[in-house]
Amino acid sequence: MSGAFQRGIDAYAAGQHYEAHEFWEELWHEETDDARSRFLQALIQVASAVHKIRNDVAPRGSLNLLGRATGRLAGLPATFMSVDVAHLQRDIEVARERLDCVLAGHGTLADVPVPSIVQREELPMWPTPDQAEPLVPHGARRAWFDRGLACYHAGEFFEAHEMWEEIWRDERDGQMRQGLQGLIQVAASMYKICEQKKPAPAARLLERALMRLRTCPSSFAGLRMDVLVRSAELAHARLLQLAQQHAVEFDRDLVPEMQPLLHRLPASDEPGGEEPNI
Image 1 (cartoon, rainbow, N blue to C red):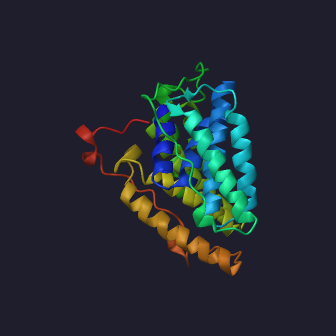
Image 2 (cartoon, rainbow, N blue to C red; image 1 turned 45 degrees about the horizontal axis):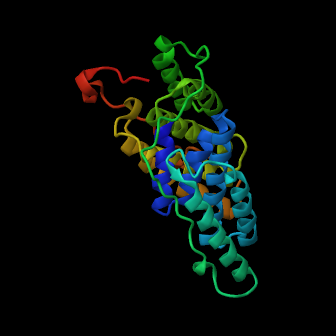
């Protein structure tokens, strides 16, 4: 869990504000502690506001987001979960004042400073809720994953999505969660285009999947991640094209690049020739 939080911090520092938003939103959905929930939501709102400002999308909405973030940070300690909250609050106020001037016709969005997220101490281990009985018994996880893979290859994308999601819900390793969620989003993207004929939502899901899959090891879950990422990038480009054309048809035979490829690594390529852990 702390790994996902830190990846959000790193993405934000690198100017990848949408990606930071995604990392933190995943944590926020599962958070039960009120203070951590408010803190995460504030960071999500700041990242979303900056993304909108930098891409000139609804800047007045960005002003509202920054104001709501300030409200959620109120009452937190000066340093919380390694972040200098007081510094962030001051930066948000400066950004709000400048954005207000821009909206009044003085200056441009490029003049609005990005609130900085400064870490003052080592990030503590992110607390996790008590683990309930797992949906999938530990010894059955590999078989469950493989059944999802078989469903995906058979074009049963909703079923693949469901099976992988049940594994993901019990997973506590940050890197494994990211990879599984990427696969879930790939399957959901294919369901959106094949069954619901919605290329734009499918493209957005695949964009989020790629963000996660690009961070995975080359042999994640025994899959050829290089092949998956390349084919998903091609599929994403094609989906964007279909969305712009307002197309509603999907023909797997005519557009084979639409479906990201989930190819297994040969067993000999796994460490010790063993089956990968799930």
